[in-house]
Image (tube, rainbow, N blue to C red; front, side, top):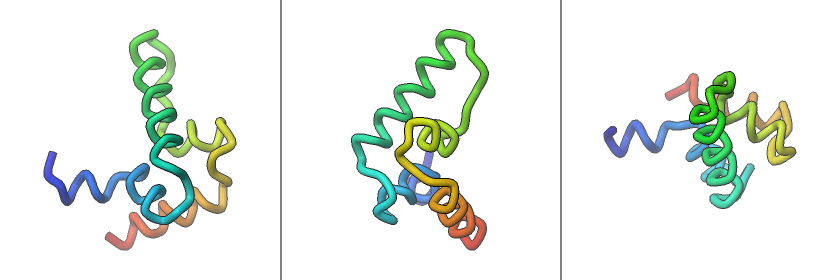
Length: 70
């Protein structure tokens, strides 16, 4: 994966935007991987961050709007 692609990922944008900390992103990514390994339903990082109380719906929308502009 190119550096440009990595920088355009939801979690990276959320950290750079000051919405979450790198530790919170790591926690959400870990949760996502564990769910996959357990055969659970796939959840997007934004969904996991919201469920954990790390981001509001408005913050998620703001990140998604920014991603649409890229």
